[in-house]
Image (cartoon, rainbow, N blue to C red; front, side, top):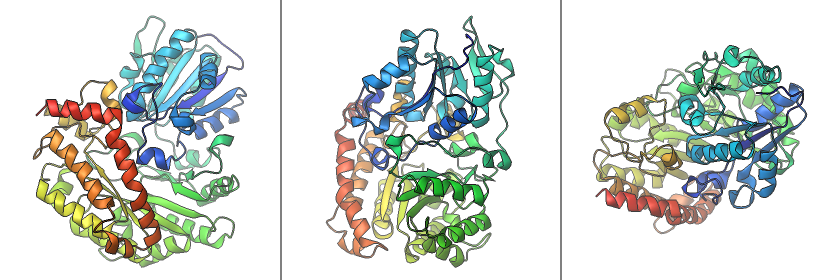
Length: 495
């Protein structure tokens, strides 16, 4: 690891591509159609610039034509001294392929990666081309790591990393503590390159979640204590993003209203500011946010503030309307509470995007028929997720112990770990039956036939109608993708 005063540093996030191939075409699904800016790369870019690094570039291939890496991208990559790649579990295969290609083209360069896969599968990355893995929150680690590399110092004192030494031995350094609220407040505003501007923006208000849902990686990655930034800093970020020309901001928190009083104050301030109240907002919320604390009474003050701040679509992790399934996954809600929360948001004028997980131990063909019927009448848009065993979660441990993971050609099969594919042996279905059922549920929900009354009853019927007109094309695109065709054949072979 050679010392260099001003190294060329490139940050990159890759698109989800068909079959997880580095040079493949982008998968055209709901994630790529919404295409929110990365949570990690813009912030890390800003931190590196703040630290005085001048030769820093960001590449996000999701914004490229068909999501494909370009020759211009590759030219920058081959000639960069430090390539920093952020990935999620479904983009791990192409990220590792990039690591191998980069090291072949530039043996002296350093490939550094992080994110959920790096945190919970560090050795997978280190055995596939990565030199250093940043585990957990990288905001503070990245500056210390760059400084150590500049000084050619021993990496053993950098907390929160795993790495290979010159002999190829792997070292796992002490984990880094989570950033404090003060440290979160002191982070710079994310830097967005020109090609990202004028699109949807993202703002983070807090990290962490106190719940302990069995399948969720949030608490494992960010902890169970909610750490929230000050409203002053959040508003600064909002104004900065509005100046870039965006007309919609998504709050990236896994639970936007975890500290509800502070969130209420933020919503008031947004509604009182003519500059930032003219755009629209959306957020992911817990169903519990619809209620007063430790109560079954609806929190109408909170709902009114959402409306006044022009926060429209709410994304709710309903997951199930089957109490036995909710208990299985340690969800902090009941089916009745889920239904009541959905109704409260919609009565308030908030369209609800429901995130439903289907295929739990107690799910049956009949219970899923009931689920899709309820969704048609009560949700404005929906995602039907197959249960995904994310590495690092209790669900991953349980499914491994029971030998129920069928998409086990790892790490390559991780491109299927996006909630759209059945990667486990279900309890009351064959994998093929559940996969087919999920596609059928989408077609039932988004079909226009039989849904006209449901569309007209939406808080925003024109928006819901538009979603129903467009979504079937996304479903068809996923069904016809080569990776789906390949995987359906694998599932048939298991019959």
